[in-house]
Length: 349
Image (cartoon, rainbow, N blue to C red; front, side, top):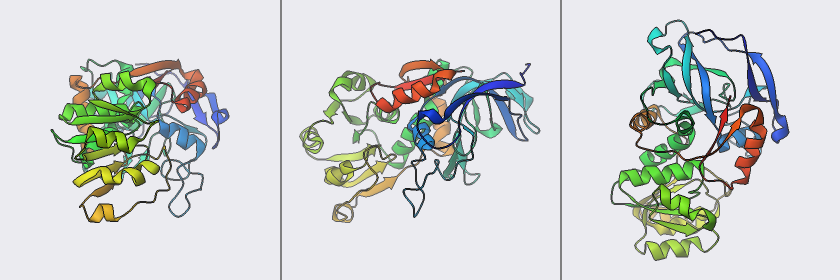
């Protein structure tokens, strides 16, 4: 396939608000050894885009430091972790059979070669991402989904949101028949967690706002708790014996107030801090009840393989709230920050 020399890309020139996003004509990157070049069909937005742009992740020992997902960002940086597209060129040492295949890209950078290595980097933060016409990726992290019944928009919605949610489900050891509580259930990760927990055969309680209750129910929640009310009291009424697992992207006061909701041996899995990152907990509620407070950062290679199999079969159906042309990435991020939608926002190069 003929690849052009230049492409449009949206990149950040520094940390700040939407004004630091610039649309630029840049050179199409060449795949290095062990890499492929993917023509982007769709790129989904995530909260990681906002936090990386703002530099809001902090660093160990300095929570107020401007930082990308796992450290300093090299500017300018093309944003975008979530990519679905087609392989149009391969680098040295890569099988030519990948050429032309419809693919889903695992956006993580790992600290080792094994299936359970930890993610320590992210496309769009530690390397250039998919807010562009083309993006390079390691060939081993490009997965063939040619036969998937999902649309490109749905496929692009999977990597970060569903990968993070599946990592939470796996690390929380959620099993069929257990009761799970999902916070932030109308957002990308939260809605994915609802769908995946339902697929596991769990009883799903979800926290969301009243206006989004129907959409969260449709995703598979057995009951929806109104986040505007007394969340703990509502959950106690629905699950008087407590919950087995909490899949939490909100944190903040919810952790401190809600920890007693866990049953004996319960697991509280945190993968976000939309409600605040400074938390005070009563540790007696942990050790006296053999409970676990688990941090979960995205997914492992093993988790992503499980996600790809779900995508190939169409076992999950990501909800796409809206699409935008690539040139309107700043407007799309502003829409994401308002959190008035249900599902994913997707860019089209």
